[in-house]
Image (cartoon, rainbow, N blue to C red; front, side, top):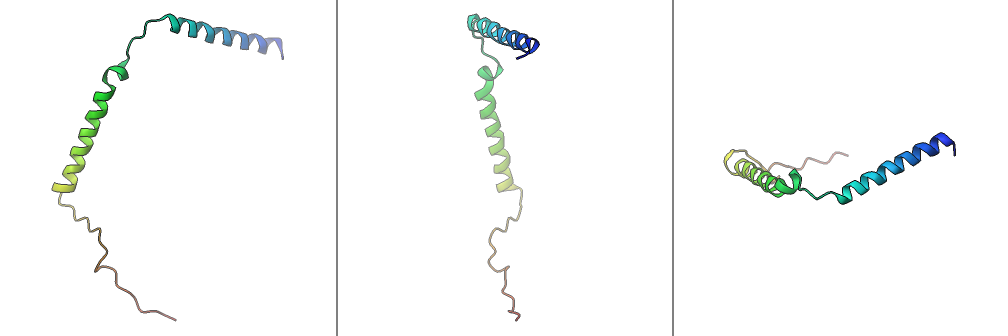
Length: 78
C-alpha cells in the first residue's frame, strides 16, 4: 500500500474512533423524532383516514367496480 493511502486510512480510522468515543461519553438527548415521532405518525394516520373516509362516502364518485352487465360476449370469428 502506498504511504499516502496508508496515512489517509489511518487518519480516517482515527477520526471515526474519536467520534465514537466522543459520542459514547455524551449524554443521550432525545431528538425531534424521539419527542414527536409517534404524534406525527398518529396525526398523519388520522388525516389519511379522514380524507379517504370523505372520498369514499361523500364525494359522490361512481366507483362501478362490478363488470356485470357491462361486458358482453362478441361473436366468434373464424
